[in-house]
Image (cartoon, rainbow, N blue to C red; front, side, top):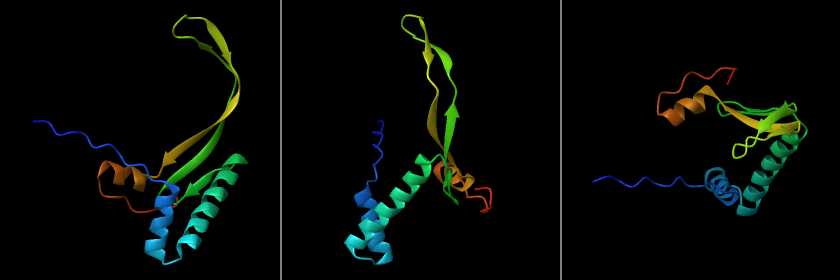
Length: 111
């Protein structure tokens, strides 16, 4: 008999605020404010095109992609794809090891 795959849980801002409330001891209002300030700061920095690097977690990097020719897979017609900025996330080696269930490597300045 096969076991059902468990659906991954989505963590919300409210969940993060509750975690701060439980672990740090700030009031619920202060915890929610702290989470909002953190998200706003990260969002604003990324919107300016700067990289956000969180040690032992990963980096959010904005990349610029040039114009290129794409192809409609259904019709085969070539269409131009306009230049744009895209957001990428590169997990640190420590986070990658945690996800894979392996022992985490020693922290370094590169993560």
